[in-house]
Amino acid sequence: MVKKMRYRNQKRLEIFNKIWNSMKDLDCPVIVEGKRDTMALRNLGYNGRLIELNDGNSILSTVEKLVHNFGSGSKFVILMDWDRTGEIITKRLKSYGESCDLIPNVRIRQDLSALCSKEITCIEELPSFVHMLNIPF
Image (cartoon, rainbow, N blue to C red; front, side):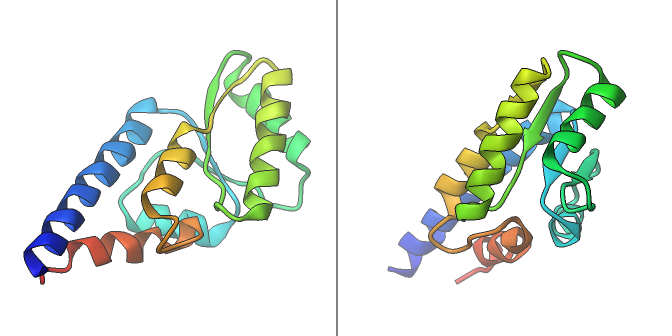
């Protein structure tokens, strides 16, 4: 039983690392909900550009800043929590982004959700999820 759990966690960690590396390889801005999400991603070693949505501006103004700063046709990753609010924000960001000729990526969020939504519900909990997968039995 313990051996099975160790193997399962090792496989899940490999999947996480694959998703994580794909996000790093994109080299584009990642939109998160707030400061705690930024801290969580930084704690996991992510050094790319992070944009916090909860900065007092509207979702549309955040998308407009993306167009202004990175240009039309630019890619960006949407990394919201996988709760109801995160789903609503993701849909709005995706819609506004596409209408402004940007290329939103929701795949990473979907992949992370599929991997760890049974244990955690938000981005800020990713470090504890990864830590749990690394614990030897």
